[in-house]
Picture: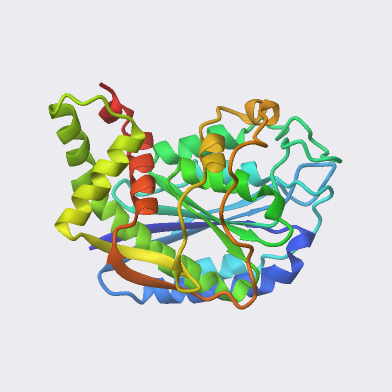
Length: 326
């Protein structure tokens, strides 16, 4: 039996008002669809976040650890509402930090879905009430690296257009864990995105156990000096030779695409201070088209593509750094 732990981290501030009700409805659909699949053990969790005082006086996070009970998960969703928020940045990093305290199962495919329309504090936005970042000193880069080391894959569902200026930042965070940034213009697409994304991640997790380690061992045994690019090229060629296929999330009949150089550069940063100090203007940005209300998402079974190879290598690297050492 396959195991899936699926956690949602949702912005519940006023700016999400147009999304909250639709998001709740679609998360319920996700729960029903995933739970009804035979041969799978599924747990659900939820984090609601707003902001720190004085920007918001309701709560920073409300945390609901994993449950098997679909009724319980739906009851948590039923009380989610959009209120407060203060300045534009929100307690995004606090929402992600909460995931580290949850009861993830060791052998499960672990997916966290961040649904956001605003950046975290500390990115240099004018009017940021906490310009140096989270007042509790949680850092989005360090938190996301911790998620990756615990085998938790992050999907960022960006509510556009408000989040569009930070697309590269969120793409970089997702890539740290081997996850994806998915643009969203209508919450009606949320159920399809997450159900199809979960199928893809479970498929990739299965492949990683057999293919990535074997590719690295082959390069080491050959005495070749290698880096991530060489591993990715070799792994891609080997899987193509074997005719290996996998599930993949698609948008408008096209694959989601690779990771830009800018997103990769962001993913390699150590903390917010480095992010604020770096000039990224000359690096190619994320090639992700803006979301449209008419977007159609689905999943296909086809040959492993290079973007998936990149993500598998990144996941393996974060989970077992010793494997990549000479």
